[in-house]
Amino acid sequence: MNEIKGLIIDTPHIDNILSGKKTWEMRSTQAKRRGLVALIRKGSGKIIGVARMVDSLGPFSKAEMLANQSRHMISTERLADPKVEKWNNAWVMQEAKLFASPVSYVHPNGAVIWVNLDENTQQAVRDAALR
Image (cartoon, rainbow, N blue to C red; front, top):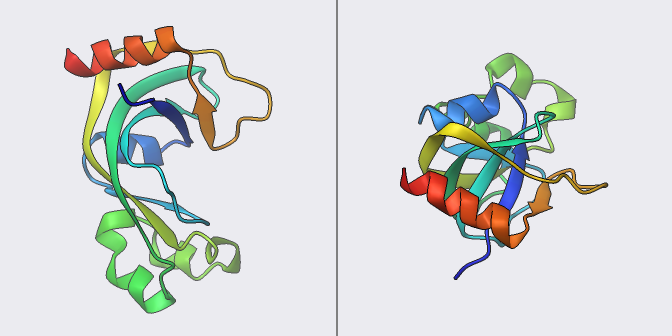
């Protein structure tokens, strides 16, 4: 069975992914991972849903970022901010699902983007995804 990792995403971005409004999670690097990803609300200690990571695209130019605002939901004002320029790689998410009840996990020291989940937590995520 494929390993499930947790991806830490801040609010409101995680909510927009889980509602289906946002299909691109913008990051500063490409992603090699594909498949089911546990979505962790930053700072909560909870996995609140899952999505299937199907691709990694970019890096995108400013014009391409503007043309794809409906996918990443970064405002024109924020795109003009030089601090936001580095977030030009899209991690493409599909089949996002919000859990009825969040799944707790142990957050290891130093985990900022990806979290390695133990077998029991991965199984809990699989079970919650099927409900």
